[in-house]
Length: 199
Image (cartoon, rainbow, N blue to C red):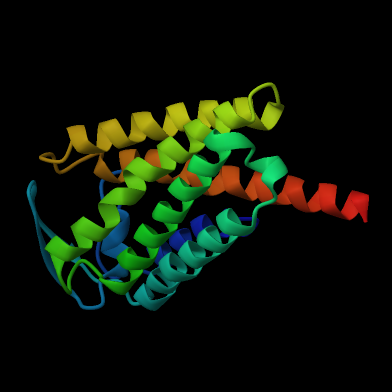
């Protein structure tokens, strides 16, 4: 979980290298993972994609998805207490698996399958943050998780609301996903610090 924030750095690097016009506000993240220079038939209209650094993004989806699953499974019980904590960990596993699927099936290879495997992350991450926040209620990290869950949920709702529009989809997608990359990093750092202190 500690490494999750580095995903955002990978995404920005890939976005800086695209060979077609690209907007963090309007273009979807998955456009950066396209393995060919082509046109994607989105509901709002066709979009040109050409991402030379697509292996970095698709590799990041897979690597950070695996890291999230491992981190959630092996996170000490003190940081995922009770049933709520256990449910949160399983939601993180679902999010990680969805991320892996997203990297394995780029949108220009199979748009329908890509959409299917990437959808769970938009639901699992806000729920994971909410459950983790409730499990850690009374702690600063729990409060931060609840705030992050609210922000992520707003992003998810906004993303679904603008599906038929050619603008704002990229912004709402990032509002939905990026906070959920930052919070696990903080959790991992805090858990590691506590472990080192005890050692």
